[in-house]
Image (cartoon, rainbow over all chains, first blue to last red):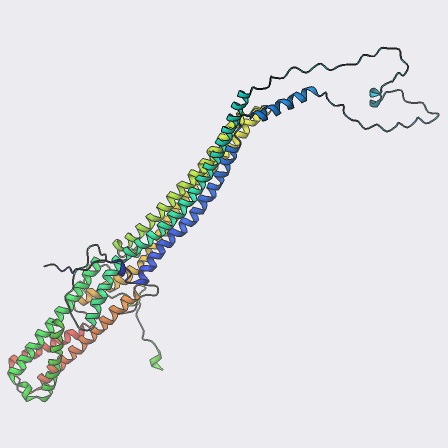
Amino acid sequence: MSQQRGYKRSWKNLLINKRYQLRFTLFMAGLAAVLMTALGWWVIRVADEATTVAKSRARGTVCPPSAAQAAAKAAEAAAAVRAPAAPALVAPAPPKADPVAGEPATGEPTADDADRKVQLDESSMTLTEEVAPPPPPGPPPPSAEEQARMNAAHAACEASIDRKLDAIEHNRSMIVLVLIVSGVLLTVGLALFGIKMTHKVAGPLHKVTLYLAKLRDGRYDKVYDLRKGDQLVEFYEHFKHAHAGVVTMEQADVERIKAALDAAVADGVLDRSPEAKTAAAALRTVLERKEASLG
Amino acid sequence: MADDIPPAVVVQDGKVPGDVPAKGAGGGSRPKYKRRVANYLIDKRLQLRYVVIVTLVSMAIAGTLGYLIYQQEHRASADLVAGLDDLANDPTLKDFDPETLKDYQRTTMADIESRDRKLVLQMLAVGVGLTVILSGYLIIMTHKVAGPLYKVGLYMEQMAEGRFRETTPLRRGDMLQDFYEAFREMHQAVRGRVKHDAEVMAAFATACAAAPDVGAAARDEVDELGKHADARLKSLA
């Protein structure tokens, strides 16, 4: 004979013992949320660092020059070769103080004396002007086809860097998104799981509580088994033994009272003793209650 | 004034009698309860189930996110190492002393490896610490459920043997207070009925015994009823 009644779990009545269930469930879900937040913040911080480093490296990639850049560079190089070195402008030295009259000038030349030039205004020497050598011929300007190829290579390199930067930023955004989504899902999932898990403890406790109320009111109904998957099986067995013990005790009382009353009635002692008769009436009330309790 | 003075109680093994129902002679299979660290695991199946689940979930979260942290850190380190390699091939740095550059690379590499190692150690320490602290806390937390159930279980064992001693309240901080109150109400109601019924039975036995000319058969049954009532009253003590 099966002692299993057709109880079925339903999401509606999963929260039987709110205080117990919510305490354990919220602890579990809260802990997961705290862990996800703290470690997630750490992950994002490190991801930011990694993103910054990766971006710096991507930006440091050297691209081949475009045609315009190459031309500008060539022009700059040519100009550097053509232009003679500009003489350094030296501020004129302050005039030397004339030697003090009566004192001989020092015979040693000074550093300034070495730079002094003598201008010969009425010289008959033929002066020849020094002419700088012509600059070497630069590379011929690139052809239109070459310029297009250079521009394409440059654009491709720039686009590649942009793609790299986008990919790095996308990677970081994905990490943040995955962290947030998984954190929310995990917390909600754990909350549901926690309620379901604690329900397997709260369910038997609820069932026992209902039987306890019946016992309190003196009704000794049949005790059914727990549902499959419920916990506290051992505890429930204790309750069943206790229940059976109380029922056995009541049955023993009933038998003993019946035997005593029957013997007293048969002996006629109730007719001879008014006290015994009064006590028998009270005992019969007890007997009726016990028999009603046992069903 | 004497009513204001609480009755004296004898403390045994650091516990007030009645905190946990005492075992009867040869009764039950449960060991005697003492609050010790080892006794925090009263109901291993109930407690460890929750402890293991929560600890595993926490370790999974910490492990996954820890791996993510390590991965990101490793990625940054790899980029830095690659950047160092680029330095060696950078034509703009050809005027630098190669030994100085190599020294810089070596120092930076060592720093990166040290940071990575430190990070792994930090994460391991956090993981182990979290597991230990969490497990300990959860065992204490579940003990507050398992404790009342253990206590109720002992009372139930006594009830199964037909004994109904007075119950005592739960310890402060214990959970399942509502359930325990329901149990106590039931216990007190049954105990009250047992007492009342035993007194009625005893009164009947006494009245019959005092009656004149009671036959032997009736006297035997009434005596048995009287003993039965006495036994019931003793079960309340």
